[in-house]
Amino acid sequence: MTALALGTADKCNAVSQLHGTVTRRMWHVLWPEFKEDEVPIFSVTNGIHVPTWVAPEMSRLYEKYLGEDWMEKHDDPKLGSVSWISPTKSSGQPASF
Image (cartoon, rainbow, N blue to C red; front, side, top):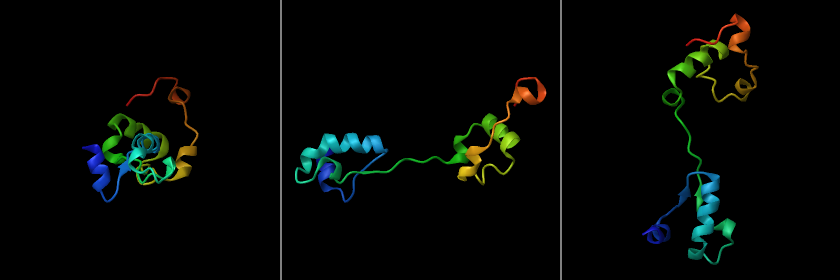
């Protein structure tokens, strides 16, 4: 069934780069005229929906250390370069959520 689907589909995709590499290698036999890395199976890396993916406890931690607007700027590369403050440095106690 997989070979039928791959042979008749308009487009074929894998869910990550690694999955694309493995899948192109596995199904190269269906496209012998192509080099393995040119087999028409494309990689589409899955994304996440940040508001529903991040646990509430982590969201509160991010708000505390990154600001209440961290969700609006979660794709900003500068946000990842923030120097994290150890929760124990500021109060001497472990972080509480």
